Length: 104
View 1: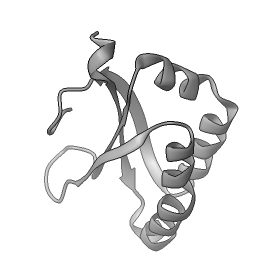
View 2 (view 1 turned 180 degrees about the vertical axis):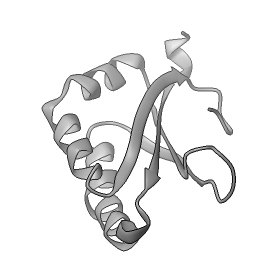
View 3 (view 1 turned 90 degrees about the vertical axis):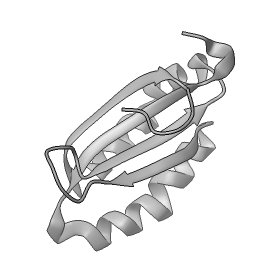
View 4 (view 1 turned 45 degrees about the horizontal axis):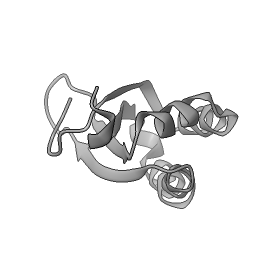
């Protein structure tokens, strides 16, 4: 992995239809600001309207792998995602080299 080019943290999940308003409020008021405070920047947010893919794919970028590894070890990351799971199902994440553009 070329750490100089940065890394991307990809989150995928299904938003529960009955929780969409609460989900949006949580993501905008808590999730995104917390991720930014921990050194990651939102790079993209995708919604899948049709097909078998998760209905949300969210990308965050970091300058280096250590920033993401630090986030993943942080208790605040665990708590934040436990809160997110009140609004979503099938939560998954992965860390990949940053290339820019759409990545899965």
